[in-house]
Amino acid sequence: MLILGIESSCDETGLAVYDTQRGLLADALHSQVAMHNEYGGVVPELASRDHVRRVVPLARQVLASAGVALADLDAIAYTAGPGLAGALLVGAAVAEALALALGVPALPVHHLEGHLLSPMLSPEPPALPFLALLVSGGHSQLMAVRAVGDYQLLGETVDDAAGEAFDKTAKLLGLPYPGGPALSALAAKGRAGRFRLPRPMLHSDNLDMSFSGLKTAVATLLREVGSDDHADVAAEFQEAVAELLSTKAMHALAQTGFERLVVAGGVGANLRLRARLDSEAAARGARVFYPPLRLCTDNGAMIAFAAGLRLTAVGLAAAAPAGDPARGSFNVRPRWDLASLTAAHPA
Ligand code: KG4
Ligand code: ZN
Image 1 (cartoon, rainbow, N blue to C red):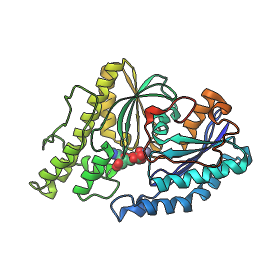
Image 2: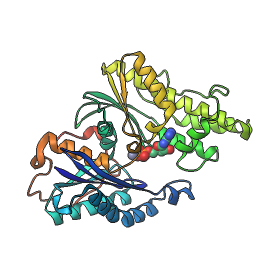
Image 3: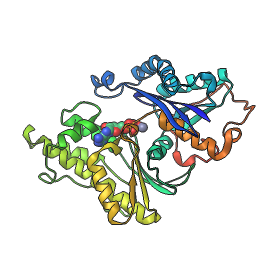
Image 4: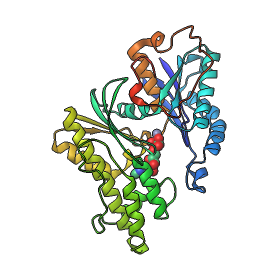
C-alpha cells in the first residue's frame, strides 16, 4: 500500500511517500526555523500561512521523486495532533480534500506516535516490545510500547519539556532559536562539572521528570559569571539534562524488564545524551535505537510510516471504515493523549 504522509503540527512542513512493501520512497521537508528566528520562537499564525504555501509544492516534489502518481496512492496520512491548531488544520484540510478527491481514506495520525515509531525506519529496526523515551520541544515522556497502538505512559515531565529547557536556556545564553543545536555546539567547547547545576527529581521514586528548575539555576548562575564561562555553563546544563533523562530511562528499563530503548524527538539528536544512554544501557545489557538523524525532528516520513503500520496491522477497512458519516468533515486535536490510542483507531 502506498501512503502519502503530511506533517504540519509546528514549524516544519514534512511530506513523504511510504510503501508498506518497499519502504520509504521519498521525503521532503521545509523548515521555518529561519522565518521564526527573528522572533525568538514559533509565531503560530506565520507558521500556518507558511504551511499553506509549502504543502502542495512539497507533495508534488515527493510524488515525483518517488516516481508515483496521485492516482497510485492508497491512503493519505496526516498529523491530526497534538500541535498548533492552525498549523494542524492546514495539513488536515489538504489531506482530507485530497483523499476525498481520490476516493481513498484519510488517516489521522498522532504526532508522538510518529516520533516513537520512527526508529523502526532505520536500517536496524528495534523489535517490540520496547521502552520509548520521547523528548521533543513539547514533550518528555517514557512510554512502554508493547504493540503498535498499545502505549502506556510510565512517566513524564511535571513542568517544561526537555527541548523547551534547551530552548529557554539557550535564550538566556543569548543563542538563537531553536536552542538545542546551538546550545550543544557551545557545550562542545566547554567542560561540565566546573559549575554545578541541580538534578531536579533525580532521586524521586517515580519516573516523572522536571526541567524548569535547571533553567532558573542557569539564570542565577549567569548573574555571577562572565561570558568566557558560557561554554562551561552550557556543558553543565547539557550534562544535567542527559543525566536526568538517562537515569529515568534506566529506571524504566529495570521496571519494565525491557531490553530495548527507543529514543525519539528532537532532543534525541543530542550527542551527549546519546553517549550516556548508550553506555548506561550497554552496562545493563540493553540496546538503544535511534531514528536516522534527519528523522529525529519533525518529518512526514514518520507520519506515513505510523499510518502504514496501522494499515498493515488491521487492514484498510478497519482503519478507515467505508461509509463513515463523518467523511469529509474532520477535526484536529491540539491536545491529545497518546495513551488513548488503540491499534485500529487513532482515538
Ligand atoms: O521533535 P521536534 O523536532 O519538534 C517537536 O517539538 O515536536 O523537537 C524540537 C526540539 C527543540 O526544542 C530543539 O531545541 C530540540 O528539539 N533539539 C535539540 C537538539 N536538536 C534539536 N536539543 C538538544 N540537542 C540537540 N542536538
Ligand atoms: Zn515533533
